[in-house]
Length: 306
Image (cartoon, rainbow, N blue to C red; front, side):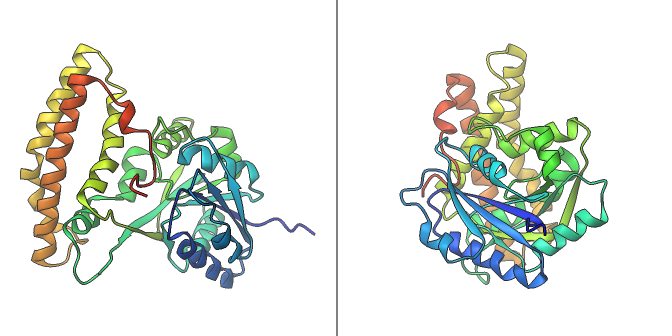
């Protein structure tokens, strides 16, 4: 009798206090009768999450010493036994039908090789969002556009057929945006991606503007690495920086039309934060154009303040 799980759920972990919340949200999905295993891959936490993992049946704890969520996920893949690999972040809470929706979708769509699910924020107080939460509610985790416009899935909520993953190859290291690079490598090779709104997870918003800014530092640094010292590319980068500084003027309509913002207060908060973060990004972009120093902006992952 084959006792292999149908799905291997892989979770990279780095000092995540909400790991047990994530694991328990997965554990309750056993009511659907889908056999699955959970592989938590610690990536250098101050303390290994042995207690949290031990409280959830079918969960295993692994350790990857190479920094970065990509290497951590790769180790999980190497130890996985199922034909479907599902990736979720340690601070995310899966919706109650998350696993069932993924499995049914793959069964019904044999032509699809990997999928990206919906990602929403989990505010501290749903009735009174902070400015950062209001911003992230509108602008962050636009999972549908990642899939349909850019050909990748955010690895905080992604699933792939195991044979496809092994064919495409591993995630990149900390010097890359590993999910973007992997997904675009897969689609370039002809593999089909799909968006699955029903497979939703909820993730905490950044706690403060500095934390949000650090997240954007990494994105800006990775983008600049494609620019280098090429004069034409550098000129375009500077032009993009100037456009970034002026872009909040055009965001009012988007915010007021968004179905992710509730009421005037939330919309005004989102507008104030998007203005602040766009000006910050423009300043960082111009700084990189002048100094060409990206190393210090990409050396951590998964919320540097932890």
